Length: 300
Ligand SMILES: [Zn+2]
Picture (cartoon, rainbow, N blue to C red):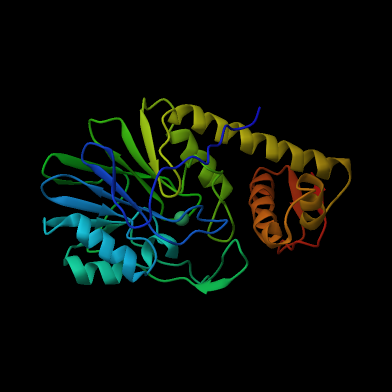
C-alpha cells in the first residue's frame, strides 16, 4: 500500500481564500521541493482574529495578511513550529499588527546551534521567545473561536498542531500534509517522537486537516494511517537491507531510492538516518558512534 498523496491545490499567491467559514488561507510565494507551492498562512475568526504561521520574511506575504485582516483586531500570531519558512516573517508581522506571539518557545539544544536543512544548507537555529508560551493542551481564544495546542514533536522539536475547538478542524502544520510525507531530519527531527506524535492523531475523529503546505485533507485519519504504514515499510526495508549484510546509510539510500535526484540525496540520507537512530534506540541495529553516512551499520 502506498499513501494517496494529492498535489491538488486551488490558490493564487497573496489572495486570501476562505476554506471553511471563518478560516482563510494565504499562500506565501516560497515554492520549493521542501515547501511545495509555498507556506500556508491561516487567518482564523471573524471578529478578533488569529494568524497562524506568518511564513517567510516576505514583504508581499506580510502585506497580503495585513490586507486580509482589514483593520480587525488580531489577538494572536500563532506558530506551528520555528522553521524559517513558517517563522521568519514573525518580526515583520508583529510590527505591522502589534499582536502578541503564541508558540512553544524554541530553545536550540545545547551545542546544536546549527541546523542542516534537508536541502543541505546549514542555518543558524534561532531562539523563538513568544509572549505566550504554549504547551500541550494550552488554549488561546477570541470571538467565536478557540485554538487548543497539541504537542506533536518529530518534524521539529517544538511542533504544535492546533485544534479549532468544536469544529473537527486541526491545523496540522508540517506534521501531516496531503502533498507529501513529512521530513524527519536529524539533529532536530526525531523519528521516535514523530511516530508517537502520529499515533496521537489517531481516533480523534478529526474531519479536516489544514496543513502548513498544500491543500486541505478531507480524510485525515486515513492519511495518518497511511503515514504510519509508510514509515513502517521504510523501516522494514532499511532493517532488511542491514540484515542482509552490513551497509552504510549511503548504500541504503541508493538501494531504496534508486532514481532519486541528486539535489534530494541529502534529505533522503537524513531521513534514513532518522530511521536508523530509531532502530538503534530499540537495539535492532548498532553503529559506530557518531553515525556517519559512509560508515557501516550492523544488525544486532
Ligand atoms: Zn514548513
